[in-house]
Length: 574
Image (cartoon, rainbow, N blue to C red; front, side, top):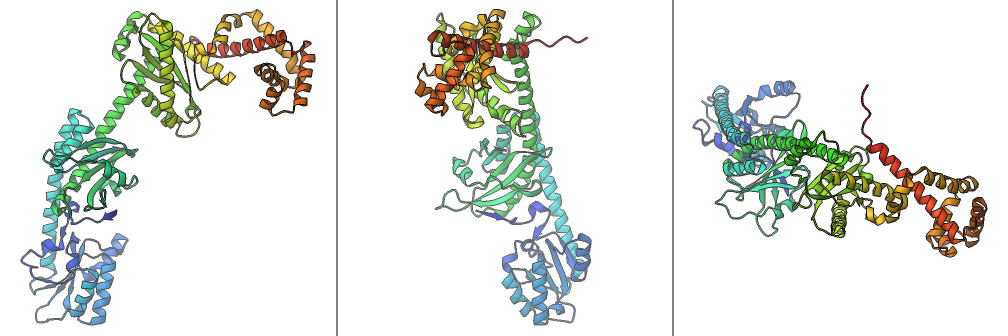
């Protein structure tokens, strides 16, 4: 891969030394430096003015400037070699040695140095003084600049018509490919392909090998195309591509890539493609910004509708019906609500919002068949998924469970392995969505508390579901407090997890000790202390059941109270 300079100056408002040599005033004047004939000439200066020019520009660079000087200044071999070398280092486009009237100078020494460096050296006739040559270069450069501006205006007008139609990025790529008569790629900021178009007359173009070798971080400077020679096929000729950044409002949106059809590329085609690339990148950025704004507005509207659905906040059935029609929501359908949680969704760091938006879009586009509504509520992602209506509730729950498994698999690459998905039981219509959301949130809170599987439904926590009504009573809460408080006060907080591990191990002392990395004797001592605190033998099945029940009631009560506080409607303003 190589990044190249412009092959000529057509895209920069300049002309090449080779084009100048076709003019009658300079024709036949080339003495040396044929390798540099592609250099761009945008102006001409006498040698005496180069120092003042450098002072005004704040740089010794003479790029694009042809230097006019009297030929006698190159007569001495040492002086000629040093002067040609200095002008080459400063980037001069060419050296024009004027043979003054009555004085004929030999340029052999200067020619040897110019040939070695590739700097064009011209020997000018008597009539080609500085005034005549500078007028010629100025006229040619201005004519070229006018031609470029006229062509750029035509390109901008053509692509502007496509933009005004709002036809999308592929249509913009198609218009650019038609004008440039070469394949065109449009990539987003992450390098993903948004569009690939080519002229109808071309052979089919496969962009994948090119995208493999295209560097992800190469863009032109100041919005101008960067020219790269790439080798998608090691056994074939290189491919010249023009890569132009798509930037709007200072934010990068992607890159526009034009692929030349021939090698080496035609200089005139390259000049036109530079103009097309610069205008095409600007207008493509406008279209991408428009689509981004539309998508953000749609996602915000969908998020508002999802939040109203799960909280049941509609003024009347007419509002529900109108908004449901807009979002394609079947008010008579059956839906299961899924809740996604992950540490990457927490508001920590600078990129959490970008990750959340990406996860929402992945979930929304995961399965196009059926109705799926996705939005962020707090630090969770909520996915409402339609399930098939059937007379068997178990089938709907199994379908919701399978979708939850697929959802987690798709989100793990974006959010990490700690992604947790819970879901409620399917319900009908808006009321069923609100109930299913409550169950999914309740399952999420219980899953964190109990260390359940990363994917689980409300039905998977059947014990808590059965206790839900009991746990809400004052009598149940009092029973839990009376059972657990003595143990917590006596052990300094370390007896409760030991008793829970012992019960979880079904009374197997050795298994419980291993799960806590405790010695068997230490485990026995802790259990004895727990029995004294409870004033009951913890080894007895009845005592274990009482403790297990108290712990589950307290956990469920804590989660339901927290969820009730969160889902409560906002207090009215006074």
